[in-house]
Image (tube, rainbow, N blue to C red):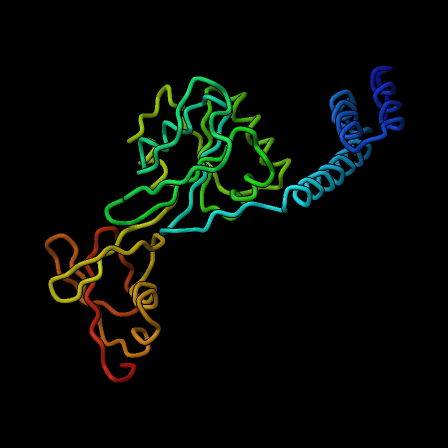
Length: 272
């Protein structure tokens, strides 16, 4: 039993034992955790309460997913998938419309978006998929966030950020995220922050006079570049000619590429 617990704590504990539904038990446990005195003598009790709460939330999430058809997936397209989350009227649809070709409904009325909306950002020829998650935070739609490459949280205060990250934690979502405040961040600034957070570079392939963009992680090498085209390009590699600004560099498979490089691969019949 917790040391020096208040009468309010014991009342919450009694309500927990009398609760009939999982939802009621979750509410009681959250109240017990809030009311429990935080000191060395209550650490074990606090850990047990949090463990019970986590188990009940997992059960609730599993039932919700089963009831609603498990999860709703959005097929990944482009070089990265980014999900936008925020409370109702936070500006999610406005950002989606400003950055992509999507035309979502925009209204002052709450919960205008009821299903995920999808658009594509064109970043120097690279396609980035942007998915707006409805503010209902339906577990079916939140499941999309688990496999996304980045989350964009639209917040107006630290309280909003705390609430949104709590929703993510409650749904066991641990995807990397950035926060955006539309009072300060313009759509172009949002775009810049997304690109920076993805930690990608754009390298151009050259075949004859034609160049085409390819997205690669920062510090990618010629080997990574060649493998993305075809495995035989690595097996039969001789050297790469890399144009960087006004310089032309000849490099091997381990040569590190930089954003904006134009790469021309030269092949042989065998490894050299």
